[in-house]
Length: 253
Image (tube, rainbow, N blue to C red; front, side, top):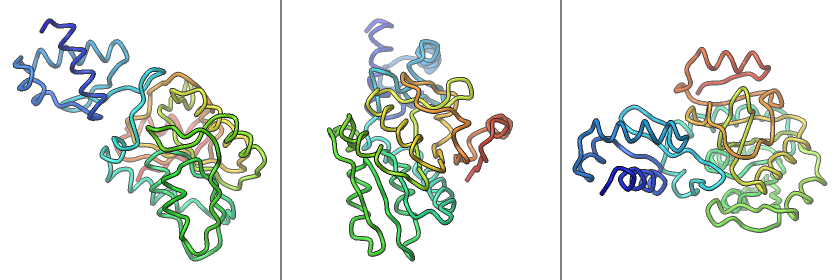
């Protein structure tokens, strides 16, 4: 196996598993840890992975996006804390939009059940989980179902959402940066997220620290569109302050 084949294999593993570990890769590939580190550094310079302590995770792009199944295994404690903090921002909202993705799904599960609430969502998983809640009225957007995320997209979903006035939208993204705003790989997903931002009176972004500084293919919103950003303590405090200077309240759970 030459260096190019080895790096391609590392990238394939990262995209399949959601993360890679330097020590494990070195053992499997029968090379030194330093060789793996050099490979990961090169892949990071090409924008294909982001380095973490002891490994790396894949960067989502126009040609690659992690599946919902992978997302349910990554940063779960952080995502659970984020979801609980985001649910506390519900306030007096009577209508809520829940985005696709695992963290929004956790937010939906954390919403209080003691009062009536209308939930609009593109996520089949979220709709199914909330359908039996006694005080909830759940509206699932129609459209083409994305197999990897079990969420609806395309003009059917966007047109249906355009007819609503939403009190609060919980929105996720594949990347968020101060320069490029909120981004996602798929244009159809981007269009739906942009519509959710447009029709909502209040907007909350939720996402783990690894999304910060990442830039994907399609931009659908600016950081200034959001009243709050909810993330975990993995985001450096100085970087959190820089986002807060743009307007949103930054909450680190």
